[in-house]
Length: 416
Image (cartoon, rainbow, N blue to C red; front, side, top):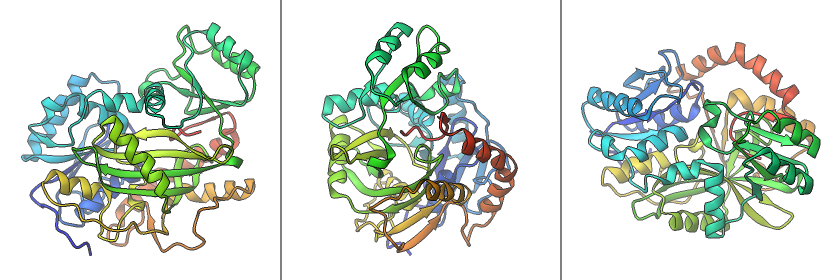
């Protein structure tokens, strides 16, 4: 058991915007604080989501959203939930839209909730591919080379000189909810393919065309941290991603805690320079060709795989934030190196795909020191079976579609 106590008078609220009921990160946050006696609340799509079925959830607020609502409506909805809870709650956003909304409307939400304060413009900039790229260039952080064409003519110019393959992504994080130019991350093999796709992107293509980092010469690394008001990490973890689904381009299916002091220092310095506070989930790719870690994504919110990371004192990033925002000390401790995280519903197809390709991760331990499952927990079994009920029928169809069509376009987390 953890050698600390959380303030049980301060509840937590999982905040999500959009329709993604099978989110193990939200379930993990409910369990992380709920097991220590913190009252937990969550916004859910309906009453039959895995999060809504957790024994550690005091109450779920059914509030289906799309991400297209006017911000004022979302703010008022959150404030109404705050009034129903009846006391200030720690906010835990699980998507970029929620993180941006909270930052940009901090004054309106501050009376009902507890959350880190920061430059209100920063989360939107970090969630934008262009915004993150510009911050990396400004602060000397390696990132894949990228172009941001504003017209078809500029795409033609790019196609004439670019080195293929390249990767196309939506420029702004929220475009996937409106009229996305591409579906997730799209690998483009040559100029003809690029020009053919670009004809459907409209007069102002909202895409980023990015250098492709070949999987044979790369490793995927993860940094999770909680950053305090002075922009210093109260806890910071590093790990390596072994498998993802879709392969090499999507959500983490299996990962390990692996020490990486160089990467930890790089992440700490970048976070300090940009002035971020709160929970972060960073995706890096190590490029063996030039020996550099390149930042792919800076997610200013709780990462779905955050429960991989825990230290010897029992601290994860969600517990660290709750302790800090309630005025308590965050215990220090070494990260539990060798600990493994597995997402049961996607790791099996991911494992088969990786075996077929022959790809391995050199830094992954041969044996795990312990395993955290995303869904199955002996003390909280209902979320697992709820996930199965919702996943199996549409999930099988989706997995087959992704298996046969992943070469051109993949969905999920926007990684190369």
